[in-house]
Image 1 (tube, each protein chain N blue to C red):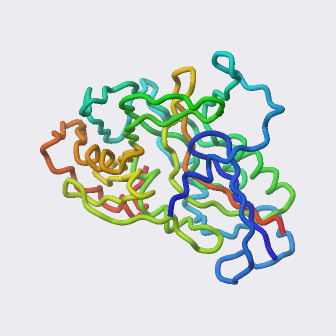
Image 2 (tube, rainbow over the protein chains, first blue to last red):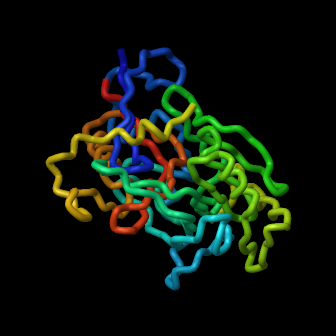
Image 3 (spheres, each protein chain N blue to C red):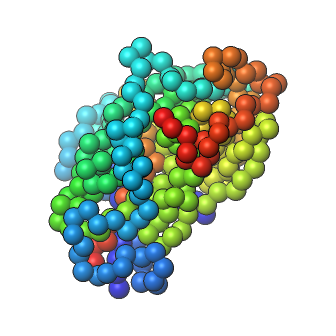
Length: 230
Length: 81
């Protein structure tokens, strides 16, 4: 039996997901013999492999060089508790082993707070978070372009929110909205609250305000297929 | 299908001294990607096949010192034979 071990950076700390999979053909690695260094069994493209050098630099003033959205200062009973802009250079260690563009390039708005679980080293997730990404770095195409070794794609359901394409993940605990040159990810633990938050976004598109009553701007050309240049 | 729960399985890192908050030692991280990248790099160095999957699991985590961190959403798979 061929075994695959999945190493991941998880939502709540350093983690390991391990799975023993019976060989079923398909997209599993083609040989039991250890391949040479750099052998890839996935679908990393030349563009992706080079993406580490093709990303926009991080603005020195800490601004986000893509559209960003939030829920304003308050969302129902939840107050804005944190705003975090993060932009890092791609991880050289990961690029060296053929990884796609792995970096944090986000602007995140967190609402409400959570209680650290006693006795666990896991942190906690606030009730609602709105995490903005440049669509050239995060978009819907990634799920199908980078499946599991057996070909499985992380599952989602397509929908529309405020006039633009969106995808629902994890039973509604995550909704991704594709608008303008951004991918907006709304996180939470209550699917109804997450949906309501996704429908309540307000922000800036190309510097122009987008009100909560407006439809969201259509996604930029090729943004959802991964063809939008950074 | 829900795949956030497996990510909460902890590695056996009890021997690592983590900076902490209060009486209970806790892990404060800048991100959740470094150890994965180190492991993937080591697998690569030793000739194991690998691939990357996009999960998008980048939910911000509120840490005990008030800071936030998250993963980058990528999963590394390596064939261990």
